[in-house]
Image 1 (cartoon, rainbow, N blue to C red):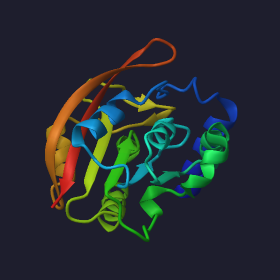
Image 2: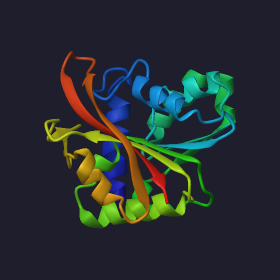
Image 3: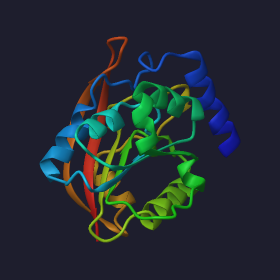
Length: 205
C-alpha cells in the first residue's frame, strides 16, 4: 500500500506545479493564526506531517523557529520546498515517509497536519497514524489538524477521503487528546473552487 501511495503522490508532484494543486495556499493563514493564538515560543519543536511543498516552514523560519521537521510521502514535494528555501533548507529536518508506517524517534511540541488524515479511509491506517502521533508527542503537546468538513469534497487528487466535523475528529483522538478549539475554513483553490475544511486544536493529555 505504501509503495502505491508514494507512486501516486510522486506522480502528482512530477506532473503538476506546486502552486496549481487544489490544496495550494499562497500563505498558510489558518496555521499561522492558530500558532499566534497559542503563543508558542519559536524554540518549540514542530513537525508538519504531509507538509510537502507547503510554505508553512518558510514562514516559520522567517519567524525564527529553529526546530522544524517536514514529513511527506513524496520526495518531489519536499524537493520543491528545499529549492524554494535555498540555503535555509539545511536548517530543516526533511523526512520522506508514509506517516502510517513511520516510527518517530523523538517527541514534538506541535504536530501539524493539514489534510493528510482525511485520506486515511481504512480504519487500520487511522490506527497506525494514531500510533505514530502518540509516539511522537507527549503530555502537553499540541496537535493542529485540518480535514475536509462534512460538506467538503468526497475525493481529492483522484483519491477518496473521509470527511469530519469536530465531534468526529474528537472521537478519533479521544484516547490521548482533548479538543481545545475548532473552526471551519472555506479554502479557495487555485482554480477558483471552494473547499470546506474542519480545523481542530487538540492537547495531549
